[in-house]
Length: 425
Length: 205
Image 1 (cartoon, rainbow over the protein chains, first blue to last red):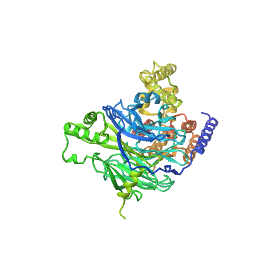
Image 2 (cartoon, chains in turn cyan, green; image 1 turned 90 degrees about the vertical axis):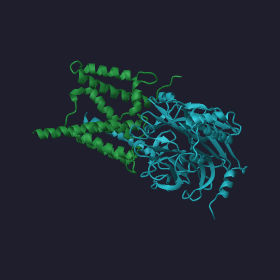
Image 3 (cartoon, rainbow over the protein chains, first blue to last red; image 1 turned 90 degrees about the horizontal axis):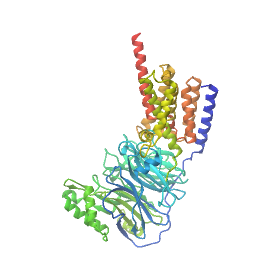
Image 4 (cartoon, rainbow over the protein chains, first blue to last red; image 1 turned 45 degrees about the vertical axis):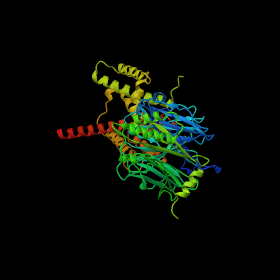
């Protein structure tokens, strides 16, 4: 190739390149969640199931508040985790009840839209963009197991009734594998979205992706190194400070892994084990308007048969249990066989929603998914907790891999609970 | 309703199809060198390219490969394109410049992959998100390569940066345009073979 031509091409390329670099967004402060002044209401706690149709394996729910105050939940559903028939499903909570679940996207439509082979789908997480649109991020795998995951995204301008075409996010140089979502997205002050993700190919660590208004990844930051950690949950305390809580990634202590930033995420402290137990399971957390941290965790060292609401008033150094959501630890001493398990599950289902039309179907579904041979297990896992603009807490979690359970606590209920279970003075 | 394919999916698929067409024609040339003239080789590659982009079920064959490999770097496409056009007659020889270029690729791969996959707390993949110092380094490398008569290195860097700047692929990260794992594996094997040949040559003297 002639030299003048080559130099000309280099010049053209780098003028274009530096122009692109000049346009990239500069580091921005974090955006704490905004709240309206909540009206003082009754102290209420309600539980329901998101869908009542038995059969599929359901897991990894997430939740988002819609513009008119309704809720929309997402989860993945299929014959089993990782099956090719797994779809992302959604339902809306309106006027005190959950409406029929619908399919948001499936494997076939995903791979056609992405123009590449997709083997299976996984965790869905939704975020509200600065432009008011809903962005759904979900895990897709083309090669291997969950360690081979990538993140795919879709946008809705009508709060999830209809969606645009799926697009792939490229977040890793090694065949773009091993990026997954679970934690609630955050916002930066410039309107960009901070999507907590995690990597689990060879090393296990958390990362935070920065996604601009056009849906492009413009930066990413490593959240942890040295302690295997997954599924980060970022708690924005103010414009500069945030805490990240992570599921332990295998090896090491059975504790939640924690790190923090004092400069809006430009640097993160070396991760440490917190005082919260963790049995290698997902957790969820929010920051209350006064700065109290609230988390939903399997606060045990093994399995997922207990789920607890805990609070910290000292920035995450110490945590107290303020409510037990689920507790089937007694069944460990006397394991339940099929029929006994079915009876127990039926009772739990009716305790959740006394108006259930067919609690037997709930039991049968749980038996199908949670019994192996003579041994049946309880699983209450993958919590997803949000704080609405009015200060109410909404929680969804996987219930025996069969249903998605929904719990809502009013702000007043929470205030009383924190008062009664607060730290000793 | 039929949906128009995204431009970045088209470029990604075409890149895979080009790579496979080039490798297939190379394989054919190696197996039947006398039967395949340069013109026939190009026609064969063209036919393979088209076939790879025709739908087979829900997706064209290139899309299945794309699911496994992701989009290939511009550097890979440049090398495979040259291989297609020049054929095996221009099969790389063991000159020091070629080895220098391969070593540069290997160094880049060593800087990128272990750090991106979590070997250290620092993530070099971040430089690819429009880090000006990284661009400056690449400009220096491209100019040095052009001056030191390594035109392919300079061309690969320039085309990679240009493709990234115009959003040729869906990736927003410059590294994905410069390097990919398959290219890195090729560079490693080619380097090792070149070193082995040098050793054998010096032993036999």
